Amino acid sequence: MKPMRDFIHGELAWKPWVTPLDITAATQEQLAALKVTPSNRAVGAYSLVLAHDPEALNARSPLYNGIMFGAKGLPRAERELGAVTASRINGCAYCASVHALRFNQLAKQPEVIERIQRDGVAAELEPRLRAIVDYAAKLTRDPAAITPADAAPLRAQGLGDLEILDLTHAVAMFAWANRLMQTLGEAADPAAPGNPL
Amino acid sequence: MSDVIDTLAGIAPDSPLWKLRRERPEVVTHLQGSDDAIFAPADDGGLTRAERAAAALRSSELLRDDVLVQHYRARLAALDPKGVLAKTVEGGAQLTDARWDAIVAHVDLVTRGPGAAAREDIESLTAAGLSSHAIVSLSQLIAFVSFQSRVLAGLRMLKGAA
Image (cartoon, rainbow over all chains, first blue to last red):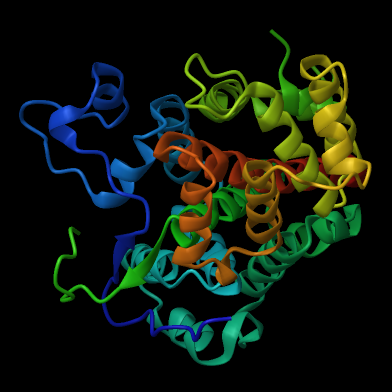
């Protein structure tokens, strides 16, 4: 695996391996999937790559929002922790940097990300976060190994069925997102020339 | 139209897990919408529905999810009645078509773990004749099956632990 970049100090950018859609040549369907309007034409390279398949993009964007931002259920910070865990294990530096920042903005517990950055997903954490990261790690590494017994540590930390479903969705979404980010392009330093983000 | 995740997880209408999933109605709707967009697109970009089902079958076998394997095997059988693609994915038939070889290699790489992917892997798909649309569709497909296997694993866990 490639060496893991530091994901504490600022977001990385992303450099595509597939030529992004030329927005001036986009179809109406592609513009709709990108949510491009006359007042909002700032679209990143990642979205412009995904817009080559507007049908898939058009379904995935509201699915992502429902999973990560849906009201009630698991606190958003803990969904972000699931995303960070999956991204760290998969080695997606871009995803890990973005979602570590989101966790920090929501949770105000910077030591959590610092520990995961330093010690990996086995880092020492408070019991509730430990249970969340353990489940997220197992689900990321080998979903076939998950058994009903894996629900018990989550329930012991007060997670109900909706919270467990939300965590499952968030971790699963990053099995998806990491695979797009890491196979259609690569993380890059924000200052790199020609970087569109 | 039936909901694929409910069917594959064995969730009966109005059961506790069915009701739990409906507490996230936008997830239910757009998860099924993603399935439809990925496996039955109006414009396939040059990656056929049969090829999509075959690639998903390959990915689900690597994930060792028997229910997903049966699902994609049936989907492929309906789209590829002569079983040509099924033989290349499951039957150990020699792969001689460079385009399909490149697709299968990409399925294996991305399913196992995305960290090893490099620019050359995308270039080999382009060299095998896949359009940008087809490459993005294939990437979405592989990533979706990995997503799907984890959603199913979590739902089975909740079902078994109820």
